[in-house]
Image (cartoon, rainbow, N blue to C red; front, top):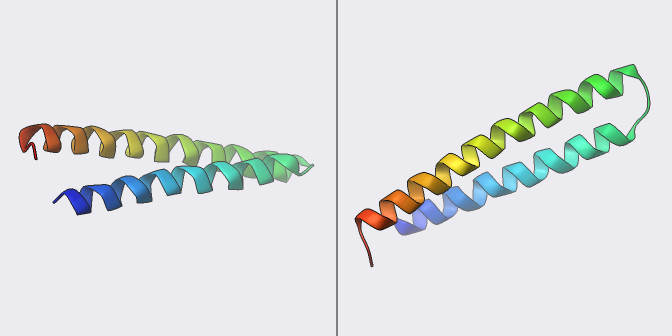
Length: 68
């Protein structure tokens, strides 16, 4: 079970980092369409951060229930 939680943590954190960098690249471009795209990707970053925090909390709870 620990390996599954570790993989989920890694995937969720990687998703946050990727969404952050894609949002920053979109933010660096000029124009009205780029601003809308940047806002959309930054909103996705917030959503992925919420999911990542949830995964971390579930992982901490599960490891507290079954100490090694």
